[in-house]
Image (cartoon, rainbow, N blue to C red; front, top):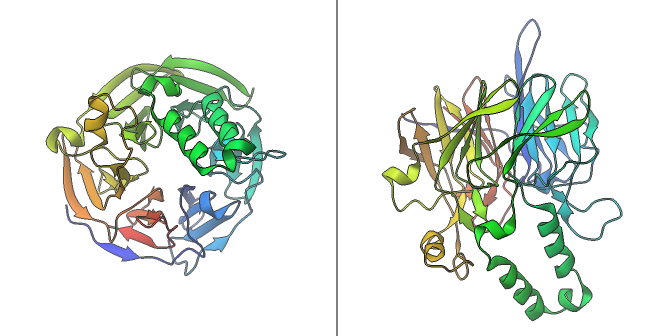
Length: 359
């Protein structure tokens, strides 16, 4: 499959670690609009008309505190946004947030739908089971993450570069299981605001994975299994009557390309009925170091921002193209016209304003 990239209108400011989705408004003429915001845009929420828009438009700002790496669940007519990392009201440093909101496209309005999540969902993934029930997998452990942030902000450590570095080295020098990321599948009923465990994930707890939602199935591609170390697997959960009924590993990129280290923060969407995973970030050599018992697997390694575009045809992954530049942590949407890439982070750490349509 050949891919052609067409540049769309640039964002008014760079966007990385944010969220977004695509919505088709029901009218005499269906109009497709994409939405993006949060992350480096703070509380800004923007839209772009795929059927004739010339520039991004400001929409109702997000009412919660600004956040990175929230869980975004697209639904018909809007989306849900949960958790993420940010400075809570009255707080003094970044913590895992535990609230949730709904955005209504037609009304251009936000409504809080959850006050407290049962676990940290930072970097996790979400899925709408039906109009009243959501499912969540993965996510950083709030106690562990918040504990690190509190330690780094203690005056004796915050004002001492060596002490801060020693604290980070100690935190990073742990095995995967020590981070206690969420390994349960949680369900949330919107009408009752009740949470419950609806299954155990058989896979390693995951953050920053690529996400595909199809009918009753949620597919996760790679992502992190601990800070700095990526998963090499593509995995899928199937739901029925609000519970996990089946799980399986799908073919992985690593199987055909053994040098592939896995990626986190990749752009994921569909093009011509096939799954696309593009870009993402990783550390060359981290897999080998971890296998050798070096738990701080990315210590001394440079972060690589990939440009490869991978396509999954249902049987295997193929490298079919390259992005205009290596980047990660942006937003991707599947639209009627093709797959849209919005913002991201460059190898220089810059939040990008560029947006592309791939078809």
